[in-house]
Image 1 (cartoon, rainbow, N blue to C red):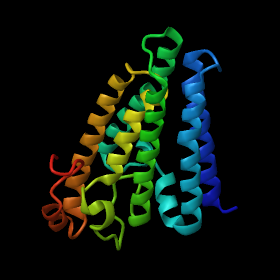
Image 2 (image 1 turned 180 degrees about the vertical axis):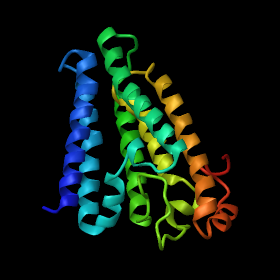
Image 3 (image 1 turned 180 degrees about the horizontal axis):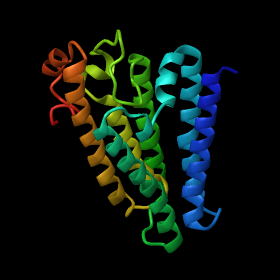
Length: 225
């Protein structure tokens, strides 16, 4: 096993352990079937994507494993990533607290719809990875990086963030919490903050991005914004 694969494996196991703690410790029970289904729905596709990248695009995998506030080079992005990490914890843990205290009840069909949104978000992210080998976890412009304007990038300029927002809005529903949707709103706003700052960076550092921005008008939602 290469050092990259070891690092990716360690990162996946760390994510899995972190999710396990965030879902079951606040719930204070293992009898939380929504969490078990979500854990499989969320983690298995991520494992599959990781294995795919390890085989077909190890350079992108290397760009993805180096993530988080500490990996960012821009001060603003360090702050954004730190805030996003805290909000991610809240998005995952709040539904577990809701489950323990019984603040809200979600029908079975809504739980499965939430898991469907999680899968849809991850599928969009996978298509982004297939199209854009420069889809780094940090804001940067590598030597030789080119503007991608086909596939999902022909519809919106930030399709990976679209996938992430869909995933996060599906998460509380998958975990059986309607009140948990409120925790996703600030995280979505931080994602918007990140993409706006990223656009300013790319305009200055990625040749051809200004032309691409004038061609593809919408950032996240076609015909709206």
